Length: 219
Image (cartoon, rainbow, N blue to C red; front, side, top):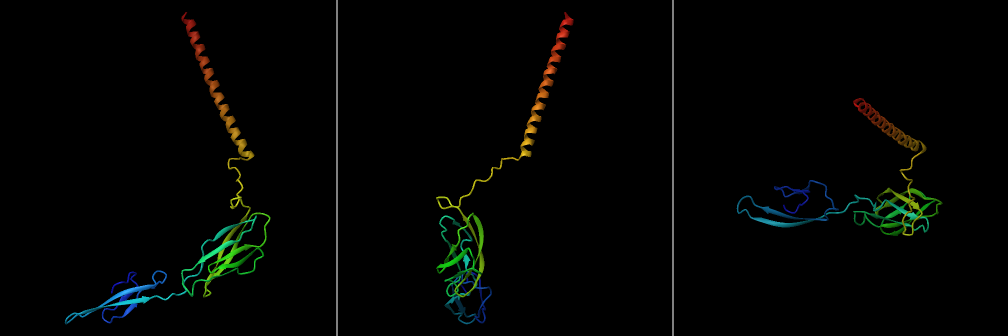
C-alpha cells in the first residue's frame, strides 16, 4: 500500500481488509489517495494495482474562535468594534455564525455584519475612560460554540485615532523622607571630607614646625 502519508491506515496483507489505526483529521487532509498492490505468492506471481480514493467527511469538532480578543472605542465618535471569528470546520458546521451576549447589557449591543463578523456597539458615552470585559457567545451554523471574553478599552483618543495615554508620574520623584535621606548623606560626606582635609593640613603644619626646630638647633 502506498499513499498513506500520515500513517493513519493499515492493510491486512492476507484478507485485503483496510482499517484505520489512528484518528483521521479532515482539517489536515480532505482526501487520501492510495495505491493498493495485490500479488500472488505462488504460481506465476502475477500482480495487479488499484487506485483507491478515500474522501473524509467533516465532523463538527471545532468551534468559532475570535480572531482578536481586545480592542478600543474612542469616546469622541464611539465607532463600533468589528468582531471576527474563524472556524476550521466546513459547511454545515461553519459559517454563518451567530453572535450574541448571554444577557442584555445596558452598555453594549451586538449587531450581525457578515457571516463571520458582527459589530460591538457602545450604547452610552461614559464620562471617563474605563475598561470592560464583554462575554461574547458565538455559535456555528450547527449551533456549536462557547462564550469568549472580549476586552474593551473605552478612552479619549488622539487625532490619529488611538487611545491617549497620560504621562506617567516620574519615577525619579522622591518623597520627603527620601529627599531628607539623600541630603543627610551628602552633608555627612562633605563633613567627613572637611575633617580629612583639616587633619592633613594640621599634619603638614606639624611637620613644618618640627623641621624649623631642627634647623634652628643645627644653627
